[in-house]
Length: 113
Length: 111
Image 1 (cartoon, chains in turn blue, orange):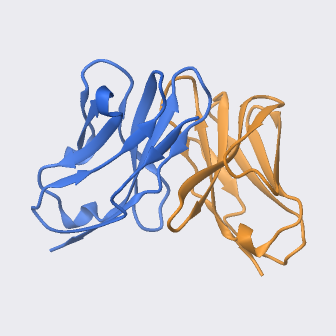
Image 2 (image 1 turned 135 degrees about the horizontal axis):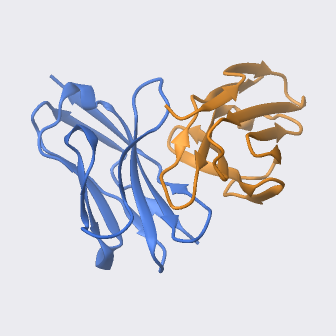
Image 3 (image 1 turned 120 degrees about the vertical axis):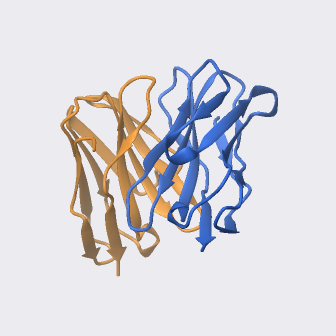
């Protein structure tokens, strides 16, 4: 069965600090990987996705993520966060050729000016 | 935004009453999902559908049922609502090996 772990539950940063959020998944086969963001009071929006190819993927708003197959990881990074990045971030995995889309428990990011 | 509409957006109901939430899409996507979002638990999959009349259970399906009689509608029913089902419910749609798009959510309170 698929599962996703996000080890950082709450991260607090100052503006301009660098960000890295961890995501590990459990599934032996090929997967599609996603990071979603949820701003306060809103629904989930896609930040970036990985299906195949270059393991370093770039998303919106300066975010990027690296897929490391040997570590079953898909960590999210941003070199310099802004106050407007305050939100909750979710990692998700969809095992290839299956129907289930499973999410992690989320990481709440607070950025202070 | 993807054409997904959840209704109602807010609902307060009493323990023991049946409740149906509706997800309507205009994208003709094959897959539809119901999740619940609770603090500390992230999004947990309740049920999903991979076609008309084709549904399957997710991680937290107990106490919930679903139906999909048309491509565009996916209904989530709480047969007898309990306080533990107080949550925010999100519908999502997906077509094949792509990303999912989410609705605005339904905040359900069971008193």
